[in-house]
Length: 108
Image (cartoon, rainbow, N blue to C red; front, top):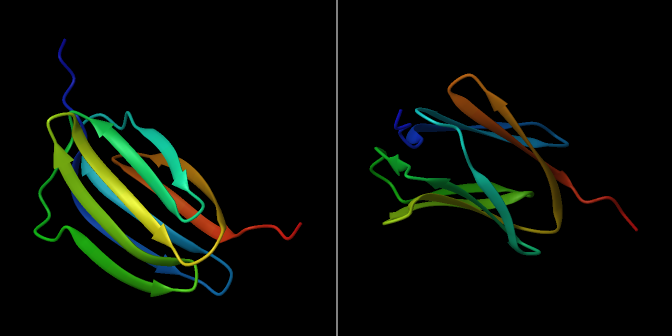
C-alpha cells in the first residue's frame, strides 16, 4: 500500500505568556524528521508532503518565534521555524495534526 505524504492545509499559532504552540493541520502521513539547523532554526521535513497554503512565509512576531517558512521540493514538504532566541521545543503528534510547543531555553 502506498502511503501519501502529509498535506498541509492550515497553520494555527496559539500564544501564551510562557510558551507558544504551532499546530500544523493536514491529512495523510504524519511521518516527519526534525532537524535543529542551528541555534535559531528548526526544520520539519515531511517526505512526499506538500502544502495547499497560498503563503510560503508567516510572520509570527512573538518573543519565541519570528516566522514560519513553508516550502516544497522533489523530496517533499519542509516547514522551518525561525526563532528569536534559544528555545526548547516539543513535538506532539495529534490526529491529523502536529503540535509544536516552543518555550524559552533553560538557563545554564
